[in-house]
Image (cartoon, rainbow, N blue to C red):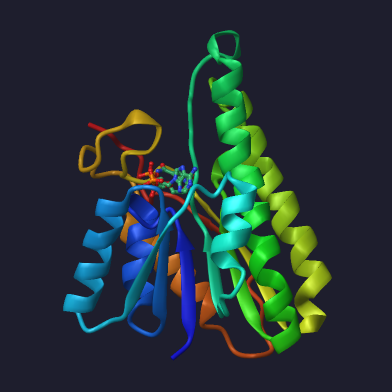
Length: 227
Ligand code: NJP
């Protein structure tokens, strides 16, 4: 059975991606919250799938290198992300660093650990969860939007670099998704995309004919009427 590793799989979009991909892949669910990961694994196995968990902070390079060294992964979804949305003059250095280190460094560390195996096998798919904030600026998003602009630059440069080696890279750019992200309460906004909608975007990207590479997917709510 092919294997898919999903970071940030303990809740929200990552959990939905793990559950969707479990229909065809053995899942390796990665995040820091051990209990939540166990619950995701239980749910997947109850539905007939297979799931292993790895408790890991993706921003810790040594821990990532050690935990992922011996893994063979067919699909990698770099989904773990942090958004601290506030005016720049109120953003602490620790808050800046956290967003940079999870959204960017973590994506690099995990990709760097798993990509050599994909290249050696001549196959693999890396899906990076970016954001429309990687294209559109917004008030309070100077740091978050900068990280997501960087996710697109990283993803599309890498896509060109490794496609002839048989490895595909896709960046998925959602708009607002109904999760706990950025301090929101999940379940509070029916106009938003659901985590399952984004998981469908991932499924679409990784299920294309051999000759076709979907390199960028933009997704947004069909309506923004909030009344
Ligand atoms: O967020 P949330 P979403 N090491 O807060 C994990 C992007 N996005 O699902 O470690 C490892 O519910 C955390 O797990 P834990 C967004 O930028 C969102 O909405 O256990 N994992 C949890 O599983 C992000 O890239 C929206 O706390 C770490 C997950 O990340 C992705 O979608 C719009 C970690 C975050 O779950 C998922 O966000 C958009 C670490 N150091 C893009 N730190 C939106 N929701 O509106 C955090 O355009 N995690």
